Image (cartoon, rainbow, N blue to C red; front, side, top):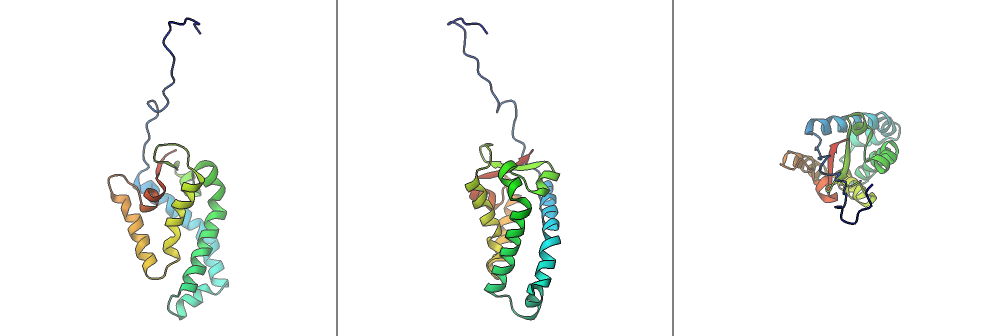
Length: 162
């Protein structure tokens, strides 16, 4: 290092060297399918032995059923993925496919953004009739130019290559 007072300051440019590459729609779908499969191994037997599957087949879907099944899915999702999401911005599926969630400005994922993102994502499981429609609209937003679902927009997040 030169201690000359006339030397230009040295600056390290990190963002210019590492451009952000958004994850493809196909990789995001595959990661979601992996996550859903992992959770189904626990959730479906729990629903069967807990009587939720029988309840769904014998009566019209109610607020109680939607709340119970939606809460079960959310709890299992957090058990499987909570630590990975907080520490790395990844679920099991995202880890397998080398993608991760970051803030829209490429900074690390915040806990509040994570809560908003998955709050919006799981809202569809809690509201009968309208909830599934909302869930479909949520994921269809991925076909926009930005490749961001509604839950990404609400939390100001991106899914990028890890």
